Image (cartoon, rainbow, N blue to C red; front, side, top):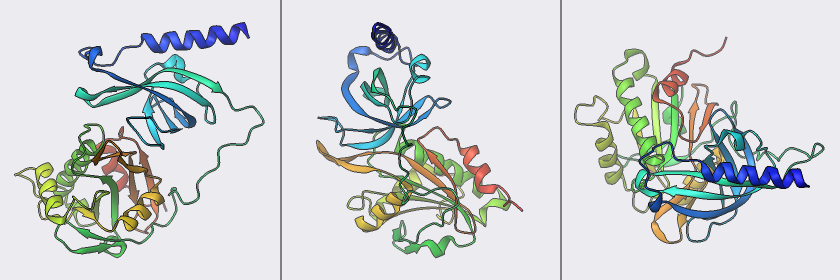
Length: 297
């Protein structure tokens, strides 16, 4: 018991002493929230954990999402299935967040079963489901519009203020669209789709303006033949989001904002899910590589 207490004290001390990667962060502007939940998965290489957490009063609804963990000493001892408490640090001016003061309140035993997999969540090799949406030109689009193409899909909403979330996803997709437009081999058979989960505000006109703003005035992709932005009925968007395991909820404190996770997926020309990226640590070049890979023989 004494060793356990010392270990927990050391973990807490190490977490509390860590500093943000950007040394210019003003600690007086950081917000702190108590977090409690269950670890779903641990990505030690990516220095993050996926946590099914309880509601964070005054900040976030109950959901499952990825959280950065900057202390590698703490990270190496975390395991899927463990219940934890932690402090969520939010650096609003810089759009950053991370976990500190992580303490395991219970750990999975050696005989415990692994956490159940949600069968409805997309996995590599599963056929992409059909859908019915409206694009930035107010035209209907569905799965058949991507038949025989290699394409990627991500989720955004135009009023998202976080640099590491929708802004990063749209920057990546617009950069990818511009690169594809310059590549004769890719541009005829490669597509991108950003789906908004804010259909009330993200009208076709707004999505077109939003996309043009990211593409830039010198872009060769402004005809939106490569990158499409779309929305639709809430139940239709929710169906697609559920397929990919994306979680999103309206912020109770501000109904113009959403608390949400991140999912980006690549669909192969045969219509099956080829790759699912969780979080925001993938690059444009990595996405293009997966999109342009030759099918296995």
